[in-house]
Image 1: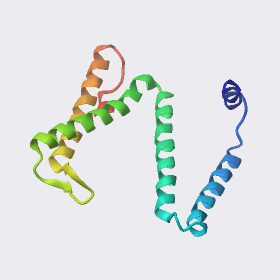
Image 2: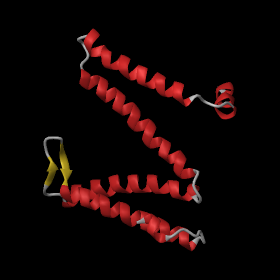
Image 3: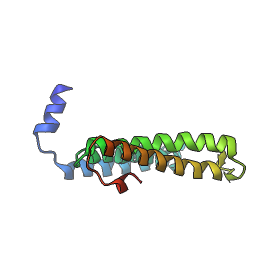
Image 4: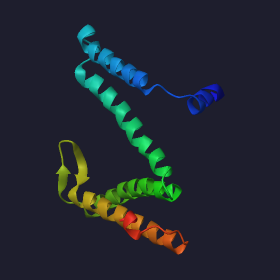
Length: 144
């Protein structure tokens, strides 16, 4: 593991080759449903999109942390996500009457989604005010 980290940090990576390997891997995975009828294209698409979703969106956390005040800004990603989920759940549970999309997710409500948006916005704003009180010079609009 230590040698791998050393290699990744100290050597230049040939991104053209990495991109080529990814494209070939995707092509091979798309051939699986043709060769083996047990699998279908939806299974392959879910696998590919799951991999891309996680790797691409988590890479943005690294990019955010490398910015000025990144160690403070990266917390917005987590605070907004946690508070959106939490407030959406409780607002939907106690105030939810109108179903958002019953065929896809029968317990999600319109009130819950609005509550999640407002709860996330409020929590990020409070985090911005907290950082302002600590003396960290970030414009408050970054938090809303």
